[in-house]
Length: 439
Picture 1 (cartoon, rainbow, N blue to C red):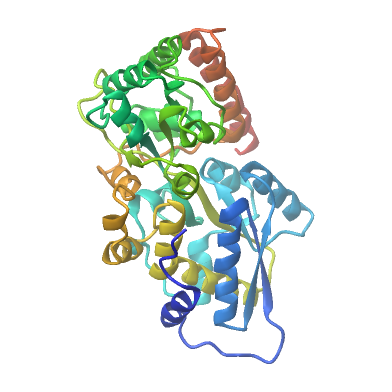
Picture 2: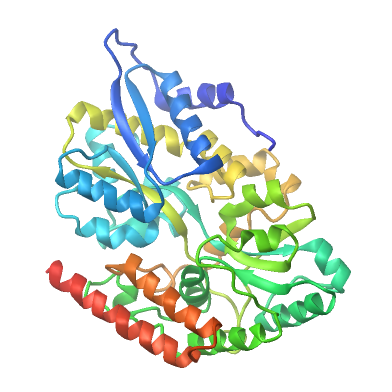
């Protein structure tokens, strides 16, 4: 894969951000960073850490892969109880409420930066990203790192072969294009991954539809799910009908269906913009991405999508000097050069306006058309109470429930109406359990 900025270039540029560094004779203070980035992205995490370590000698970031998002979050909480916690832990967006409720375990990253005297201006960050992780009073709880949003990926060669002359913009377009693809011999028209995130959460925010009461949980733990509304039921029912003709084929809960797209079986795939690196490496055809399709029966225009991915939480229980190292690393991590490199390599959105501007200046979007789709989706409109995100307790487990019920729809075991009613009912039980535990 093409490298847009070399390691020395990053180090040289970021040295301006870091300021003067004193080289102490004593051993560097270690800062443990537990993360959930496996494979190639894990190598990129190691590179970022090594570049920071090479830039100065006071602190040493030690990245440790701890498994998937759920495993990383639960292991960090368990480690805190055992007084063996890391300094930094990567947690996915739906773990926000759980981390907030981990009383005494976390230190707001804004507090960490201020205590260390590190320059920190929240206006530098993309509002659609930073708003997800703030308290009602506006304090930033965790540092955005790998933020993404779902997009519609498509196989341009397959479109050409099947006679799909224009890129789908609505669900009617998706259905029509899928039928042409299947008629042309493709296994399916489209599939998707991370289905709760794409087809429940982002479908809802894209159409300004409420996911739950209390501003989707932002205004209180006493929220209730409203995912069993007619709009969600109807779109899932429509997709289930399309599956009868293989216009839609289900391929798994997370990223399992990636190969169905990259091997040419399905002409379209809805999933994270962060699959850019994988698709670029695996696909042997011309591909592109566009915005999520609009359900014109629900809205006349799209609202905005919401982020997925993770942020970096700082855990309490360490010495003050170690937190200075954490703060300096956060400054480095947020610098335009590092964020532009990370964005261009992975497909995650740049977390700052400066990194976005730098990517434009470097000509990345000119040579890789469409790679700013995720940023445009997130910033399409000012978020509403329905579209700024969600913050529900026990949502990791609730997602499992939603997945189970959606799979019952795809298998034909349940109607979309019955499945979503059951998902809301079962999910609300877990919300009440979380509320009782955190009064």
